[in-house]
Image (cartoon, rainbow, N blue to C red; front, side, top):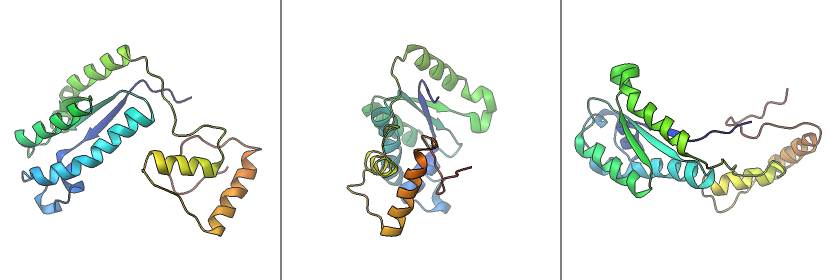
Length: 178
């Protein structure tokens, strides 16, 4: 089964700024405002890993030459508020030797963690219950609605589930039933 000891979230400052509304043509320019806004996305991922899945998390900033000290500092400050270890990694530019600190941090966290992963839903939950739990716990939806056709298809899948065990986690828009 799936029993990870920790999670590693790899982020780039450029991607975080893009999530914060920066234009593609400006991602290599310092933009603290866009970075600040985009960090909400990274914080949500960290919260999902630590609170929903109950796993320790390390954030690896994959450093690019355009990243500024002020941008790097902001990420470290925000992750510290979430009590998450953050590592500046240069594997993009330096290959494996640029990820040595990250590797050491991951090993240390694995050796010191006794937390057990929990899922967003229980195996015994119906497919509709699973959809609801993922939508509410991961995406913070207040409710899930579906039209009759979709609900009927899911209920038909659920009937087949009594004969077969579907994968616990799938991240595609199709459920493959081979």
